[in-house]
Length: 62
Image (cartoon, rainbow, N blue to C red; front, side):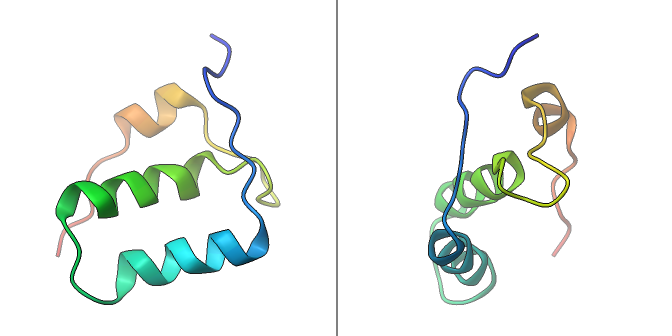
């Protein structure tokens, strides 16, 4: 199955999302959306995750 959306984050966007998911108080859905964008980012050295991989990924435990 082809990726539905191709995500390509700049280094600044990636840094912002990484900080967003680890610091401050944000709504859970916003943090989940940020994590999905980080996983889907095609500019990672190993490439972005496929949509099916992201869907099956377990939620991190606090």
